[in-house]
Length: 413
Image (cartoon, rainbow, N blue to C red; front, side, top):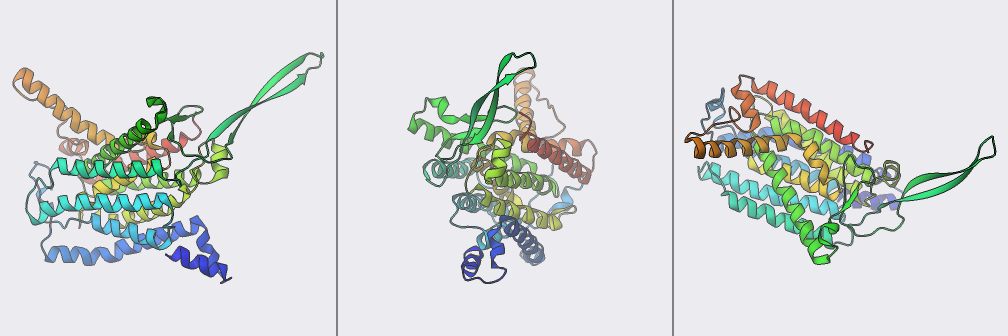
């Protein structure tokens, strides 16, 4: 909205209006707006939820300080989503296909999570929305996004190409040698593609179409399946991570910042050429969305840090994970997610291992055994006597480490 307004003013030579043409300026505005919206609206929303007794239903798992959180206002994910969407709508380019995908994803997943929180809170059903309905909602979004990216004419890339130049070298003795020098450059013509980036590998572009022999319909189906699988894994991983005050919020901020940096590099032809990565026209606009999301998460941490005054609920956790997954797919970096979101996956794997081992040992020995004291992983450490603020801080440090390694993959190949 504001982008179009200031572009109109710039065309009429209004001083200062040209600043809105710069992504860096609009990203800074998005961060500030998201922070202010979250902090300023947070207190009135918390007071409203408390007055109407809209609080968290706590299951007694035998954890220290657990029952003291009963009744803490929940559905704070709505605050995060509002703080993300308002700056994006104001300073983002709404004609950009990638921004449209992110807006649809945020609203869709926020709606699925809201239904879950509504059932838990207002219907007093601790189970919430049945898992199969959550999965249906996530699969439907994966189908929509995968199809949009496959059929939209705006989703194009400039692939890299390698050229070899031969140089004749004559040494002091008059011997002749041919020296071959390889130059990597970006293809001048954009094209639709299902290629993605493989980390740690030289000439690291992989085409999903190769797996199905290049057949158009099969490639589309595979692309949709990949989008859906990513969405399910990361979204549910984030949901499992949301178990301590400020944990998911603090862990997710570095992830979003790195994704924003990768979007900027992929959408800038000079940097993409220098780093030998695909140039994706229009993807730099995702920096605005990433900036708004980082600001919203930081602002939410104002109230969500220990002791939490509000929980995000599934409204926030499902949306955060799903947005991260689809964001990575938009910039062709989805294969980096196991590294970038390593903590999400560690939490998910701990639950899978715990349940699988318990069921196996119960069938074999008649008594279920456990690998961890409790799953997900953060509860394992909590059961070991580590206070939750220390667990959150250490997870945050690990998240920063994983994010730094992810950025290093740009040159480690």
